[in-house]
Length: 203
View 1: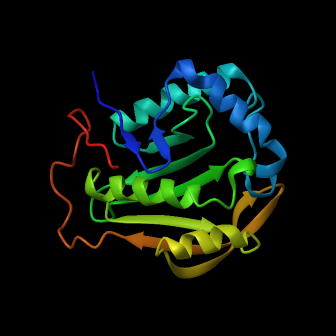
View 2: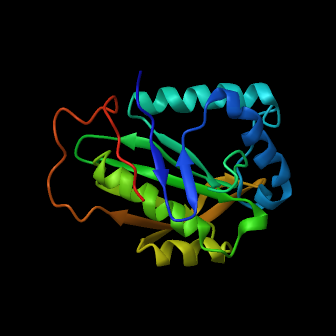
């Protein structure tokens, strides 16, 4: 059986959910539907359905096994069943680029407590130390000031500005382009890492 990451921070548990936990993911998205709307791309017609999230989680686990993405959710240690946020490292490209794209969300009830920063500190470390990625890219709409401040605190560097970059909330939105680079100067290893062995807990 493949091993999936289980990261523990001072306050959080991060993991790739199981299909049996799809209801928790649906609850998280439904409770924050309006909160996430200004920053979200168009959604599938069945996005707010249990079947969609069961299928989505199965795909996330498959992509992790294939080294294509790392899509994690997180919960408070005292309430492991309630999902309060996610962080998705997707579009992983190996070879000389060896990079991915980062996206993230947190429940409106838990903003302003440093929890998203905590989750990303540990998950980006996992991407660099275990998955051996070289670069993580994260882009945000200029009006999303909180996202810009968060990325700055995490040492992401502004690299540019893209006009009409993504179709978000019914319109083509400009984005600020940022990245975080692995300080390890070693070139990517060949063959690239697989994720079937024992995984460490950060905590």
